Image (tube, rainbow, N blue to C red; front, side, top):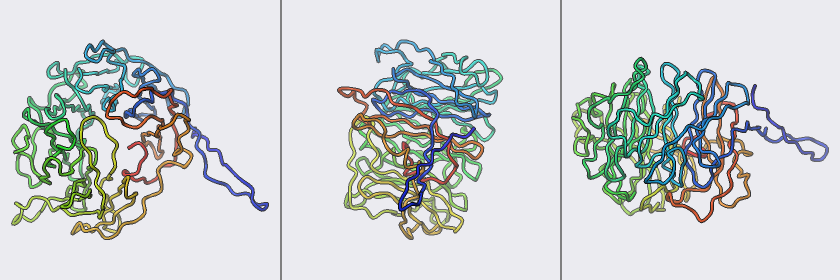
Length: 462
């Protein structure tokens, strides 16, 4: 069944006017609201799965068979984490402790998360699509799994399940890739070395690998020299078909592991020049070239958005990437320090329209939101247009809790022409530090909505 909608109406001079349809959410549970952390939402094979932290901060997984409103809920067991003085299935105040869900070829579910330089937290179901059979494994390879952060599940072009994570810490880490064998139910390294290697002097902050229209996976990242986010630097690029052989945008092989001196550089920004790992994105043009948008400071220290594309002319290939400004802002997002910080600028992925122009959505704290129209050949901005309508109905954009300071968080999953929105409320980011008091748990609800275009820069909870 579809989620019901309530039509609110009012009378004026004897006429009745209908306002928006107010969607009615399906309750999932209650959630920890002391800090924002991304949950996991997976819709697959007529079923829906949600991984979240409940009101007692416990790792929780809920499942339902569509379109039923009845959820089955389990609490995967944890093991004691002596450094954190809590169980591994109980979260703290750290917004890095996000959760990730995936399904393999056989239909078994995989779950990881609640890690910020912690031992690997990993679960897998014994039975396909049955969350009651989740078992705690906390091991994939058995090596370099004691200081894990940023788990990412994704699939290669053949449909094999892969897992990427950082081994190490901010300013000193390596990105490792594992691949899962469904027949043996075992993981192995894709490579016997990291893909991105900080050499003990830095670490990489990378986007998830993106499968492009050219059949290659494209990877964009920046380096950071210390835990201070102001030391982000050197926006870089590589691509691969198999995650084993890597090359630059001109097809030249890159020796592994990829270090700061081996990577192709998009923008050689130095520390304190405005690169920030929470504000960059990737898209493609009509010739299947990668397009990267990012934030950095201009020559007078103002925040600006830029778009870049590799130079395709072999004669001037040494020029690297063409970088063009998109914004004309007069403010500075002056970020620094460690811990999770709010995003004062967000940028959506470049999108090629039917009219041959590119569009890039943006949202800022100081200059509002909008959408740039960009020439595809020169990357020059043509115009600035109003933002797309909000992705969520107005009724879902209003904080419902009376506790001061709460913000709306959401996740979106698309399935068979429908858009499923998971919504909850939490306090904003606080550099992962405890607050004097935590708000009471808030409601976690699922909404089923028509599938419409939305801006990735203005999406609630993105």
